[in-house]
Each structure stands twice: as structure tokens, then as C-alpha cells.
Length: 350
Image 1 (cartoon, rainbow, N blue to C red):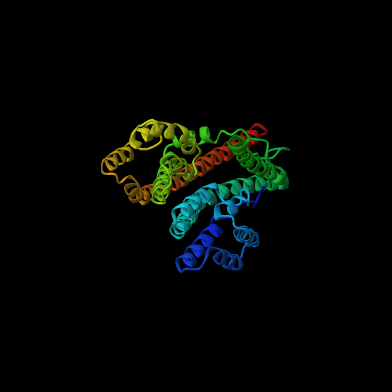
Image 2: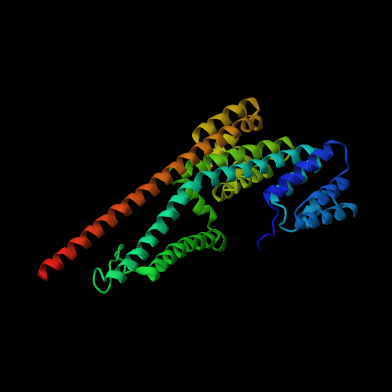
């Protein structure tokens, strides 16, 4: 159901406030009540009030969060569970706040990168619609091109009706692609296969892999630092990537590690991690500093992902410009041929 899960922005604020209050010595129940009253999200306020009531009944925070259904992400609940067991709740909440704030910044940057190519694309779509309308309008005035008028695209689209049909084709096509994506990923459960396919797309695949590796590195450091056992730590870290292909690799990865394989070897078996990452993990294993080394690598892979996303945005912009240029050339030839056809008809009538 839409709106059934807490937003990352709200969760980041809640986690940050709770961490600060707990660090200051305020007890958990009072902290949650204060944060609940401060929240500008009515649903969040009500949910946190329910959590506080559960705590007053003697339940722990993990149980209280689980009672809220899918409102809180499972990764968040898992991290809280480990934090309660190890006494590191303030530290883990701070890490979770950092994580969600970072996700928000990355999303904003991504939107900023794709805005211009999208503006170019939709501008081209509406320019074509305007041309279809104008040519139909002109033809209706002077009767140019015969009774049918001049069709700029050759698809039988002309005038206001043709422009509306063109826009309907484009927007219905885009909506159809969205529906197919949702059907494949949610209805048919093919997120893993689709995300693996995306990982093979030039530029896009590199960006998605870098983002996933950065989040895996962060997740592994946080879960290990909090004292989570290796199997649930790996599972939570893979889920933290937000990538279906990585999350689906969990059972095989955990099986290999529990069977005695080194982490580097097990990661290599997934065929999802870059070779340089595998080599760094293998070196870190010899010194027993894998979590710390992955924590150091996380921002480096995020930076690599940002570079790939910028490159993808530039590539998309170039592709849109090429499409617009091709359309302009096509329309010029259509107009020239139409004009030559008019001259030929006029000469034949002499």
C-alpha cells in the first residue's frame, strides 16, 4: 500500500534525534516520546507513540518496531536488534542516520543529473506535437498538400487531433514501460534477473555496481562493528545494497563462507564484485581488518558511482541531442520532398 513505509528522510531525522538524546543520557522511552512529538509526519508520530507504549509494557525496541508491520525497513530492525544486544544503540542509530542521509543526497544528485536530458527529451516531444498541429492548421487554411494536408512524420498525424494522438502514443508508451518494469520486478519476482541485466549495460552497469559495492561495504562494517554474526551480517549487507542481484546472492555467499571459504573467494563466486575489490578483501583478511578496510573503500566506490552517473547523464544528453538532430533532418527532407511534389503537380497541370 502506498505510503505504508516510513520515508528515508523521516527515518534519518528520527534516528539522528534518538542517537543524540541517548548519547546525552536520556532513557529510551522518553527519547522516543520526545522524538514522536517533534515529528512533522503524522503517521510517524502515531507509530512512534505505539512503539513507546510497547516499551512501557516491557517489550524491547526490536519487538516494538516489528509490531509496526512493514513501516520500518527490515535492515533497520535487524540493526536495532544487534545494537540492543551489544549495548551500541546510540552508535548504530547514528550510523543508520548517516546511511539514510547519504541515500537522500545520492538520490537528489541523480535527479539533478537526469533533469536536463529529460527536459530535452520532452521538449523534443512537444516540438513535434506543435509541428503536427501547425502543419495541419496551415493546410486547413490554404489547402496545401491536397485534402489530407502535409503530414510531417508520415504517420497519418495532422492537426490538433494528430498532435494529441502523438502525445498519447509517447506518454502511453512511457507508462507502459513503467508498468512492465513493476510487473516484472514485483508481480513476477524477477528483480534479480532484471538487475543483473542492468549490471551488464555499459555505464549504467558500472554505476549500479559501484553503488551496490559501496553500500555492501558500509553494511558489513556497521554490522560487524555492532557484533552481528557473520551469516546475518552478510545477508543484511547484501540487502543494504538495494540491488536485487546482490540480495539474491546471499544464500550462495553465506553457504561458501560457512563451508570455510575465505570471504574474498566467496565474494568472487558471486561474479558481482570487481576484481580489485576482491583483491583488497583478500589482503585485508590476512591482517584481520576486513570491516575497517571496507569502511574505507565505501566512499571511494560512491565517488566512482557518481562519476559513472555523471557520464551516463552526459551520454543520455548526447543521445537526446542526436535524436533531435535526426528528427530535424528527417523533417527537412520530408518538407523538401513535399515541396518538390507540389512543384511537380503544378508543372503537370500547366
